[in-house]
Amino acid sequence: MTTVRSTFDSALLETEERRALRKAVGALGRRYGRDYFTAAVRAGEQTDELWQEAAGLGYLGVNLPAEYGGGGGGLAELSIVLEELGAAGCPLLLLIVSPAICGTVIARFGTDAQRRRWLPGLADGSLRIAFGITEPDAGSNSHRITTTARRDPDTGGWLLTGRKVFVSGVDIADATLIVGRTEDARTGKLKPCLFLVERRTPGFDFRQIEMELSAPEKQFQLFLDDVALPADALIGDEDAGLLQLFAGLNPERIMTAAFSIGMGRYALDRAVDYARTRQVWSTPIGGHQAIAHPLAQAHIELELARLMMQKAAYLYDAGDDMGAGEAANMAKYAAAEACAKAVDQAVHTLGGNGLTAEYGLASLLTASRVGRIAPVSREMILNFVSHHSLGLPKSY
Image (tube, rainbow, N blue to C red; front, side, top):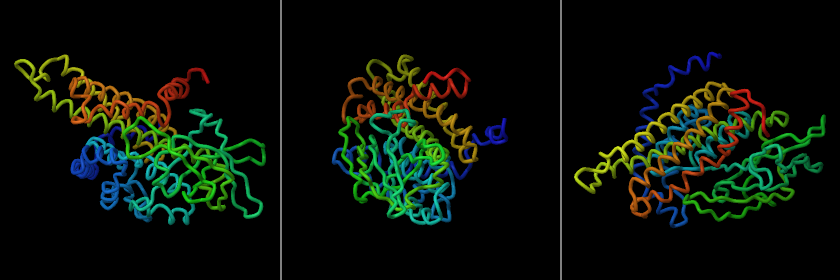
């Protein structure tokens, strides 16, 4: 057992600074609230006012290095921001993508010029970066990614070709971090690499995917046809792409857990408020165990998921990438299951009111499934745990 893991117990209790952050972000989220969020969705608009205010208060860049305008914290702090905004009914999906995945990768592996170019804007909210990994024919099998980059002999840069699907927020992002592959000159095999492609680059085309999902951020297909990139579009070391990729995927899983926990808390709070006051016979319905016990169980499961998320964030921030990978997968799984259960129970608690626009829970039935599917399916996490954690034979 490493020192990092053995000292985790003392980190379970949040510091005074983190408790203050949680309280302040919660207050900001409640000031906007679910009505603001749903109004933006119905109008086809973004939650820019909330995004910019959160940036001005230092919340968007709380995990980024202080020398580039960030707060100097880690995923522990950023997960608090996303969870509390979600618990207030305002989950900001791009917090998972822009500062968590892309900001982390650039901060850890980018050149100083790349850090100066992107990190201050990510921290102050003026820049956003999307993330493209999923492909139509690859699904969860990242080894089948066919987006490839080859050296441009004329410029010394890169020519990038391929397709991506389910990329969030491309239309509002200034650039997209693309997971591609390059040929290893020594083996002839393809190896993963990360490229930063600015939105207005010629040959970088995107089309919206119509989704049955109520969210301000839209989903897109990307079409890359010999997109010419400068040499410095490559992030990090060409020979360490896999390590760098997982440096972004672990934060994605941790932040997806925060996203799910916040959503589950919001739904549970609405159901509890309703159960306290809704009276059909002589007492409020919350006094009946058939209502109270499932809500109590949902609360327990959300709290347990949060503990695993905190562990994953702590291990990642402490530099234990291997330990963080296992914990991040478990946290994402637990949080997604707890969220789906909490939302489902909340709708049942309200009965017919749970499907009305007035109470705003029905749209969460779809949204709560996102954590079960993305960024990796629950079944692939079970594969990971059975193989890596339990040492069982690999089935795929």
